[in-house]
Length: 79
Image (cartoon, rainbow, N blue to C red):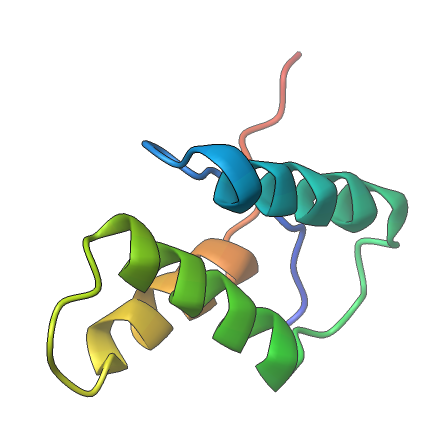
């Protein structure tokens, strides 16, 4: 798996989903930059993306890919 910095953005999420996303982001910030992405982290991020999209029918493959990309892309650095 790739090395990354976590970045969680739950656009349009409310209630429990937003609370979960904020909690995940806080936990991610506490981890070291060299933390490999786990399948569980990708699965959870993909789930929130799917839920925020209105739970569309399908296998969720594109949500998985989007979550994997988001988790493996470092956030922009503020100088």
